[in-house]
Length: 544
Image 1 (spheres, rainbow, N blue to C red):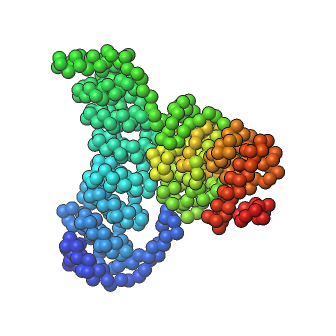
Image 2: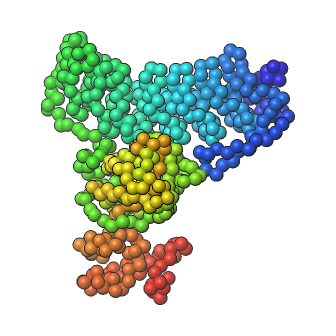
């Protein structure tokens, strides 16, 4: 144990050179590939002259755990390079990831996650790293960045600790409003959580309660842990602002909890002054203008008119948009599950024999940047008859590629088509919605009870708003629908209009002249800006 004692001491003293010296006698190299990282290969060194996984007797800390505790990233790298066990736990069941998250070390977290540490391991309290992150030790921005990193790395938001609390419950109880938003944006199904709103209401965290309600949390459900609703507990703990907010969202003051209490009877048992104030709020509920969730939508709830700068508009029935594989990337910013084989980009490649294979059972997403604002009036999902076929999905919109994301529609794919993955994909089209946005997130809630998610492709129906704006600029706003119905629904198709097409589509000579001039100018601008765009051959004599 002599060399091991020296090793532990060197780590505590943050002595990188000493650590390197003790580890320097190497035996053999081992090449390891990590399937979940794109195009990455790692070489590790196995050491036999010293135990890199030795432990402190009192704490069960390994050298790697000590390096993480000390924030010594370079030393941690050395141990990982020398094949230290990244899954080792201390006496309380904490892994290196738990410790890195507790100390808000984002760079250390990234190092560990890139080296196969299990993101959903639990400690003796049943907490995952996400549970710890949602309680937050650092700044709000850093805390959100850590939570996002864990989510993007596959953290399961549904795991409950030994106190039966999820990560969302802890974020709500700790008043971590940005983390609560982040979790709900990542997984809209979390609105069905029953405990978070009660945890926030008990503590008087009005802003957190409001966020949960805006995302569709049910204020009249009974929490499995307490057996009460948020209104019961807000009244019990005398949180008048929370009580009033819940009443705005139609919380029921006469709802019985598991103890047969109602918010009204609880209020009656409070000290007189508090009792009078709370009872008055309950009695005056009928005078309040009811509020509905702004950020929750499904096929029965499309009446809200604006989602940030993403606007719901009158229902259209536009033709298919040609896919552009550059709309998305096989990168964490664009996809919840990046894999080298069968990546998310294959749903746009136009090849219905390729698949996007997602190694999770539920809650996966990909983001699409259409490069300009589009009106979207439908989507076709190409799939097959398999348990792996996507089932429930959301289309979500945002004014930014970074969110926040708001639901536009919820749809359900049937398990139809061939069971043979080599057979032609089966199309299912959904068109009972219309919205305008540049950024779209396809959020897959679940599949048909398969062991992973797998389908062939998608295709939007819609029109590029650049076409609509150009026609409006030429005084042809009344002709927009005519142009689009004839398939002129992309900027490229618009710029490739021929003289004959313009003559057929536009009768007014002045408008025709304006349109022709605009097309000519925009074509030449496009040619000068892009070496990749190829104009129609008929235009070559006109300027490019």
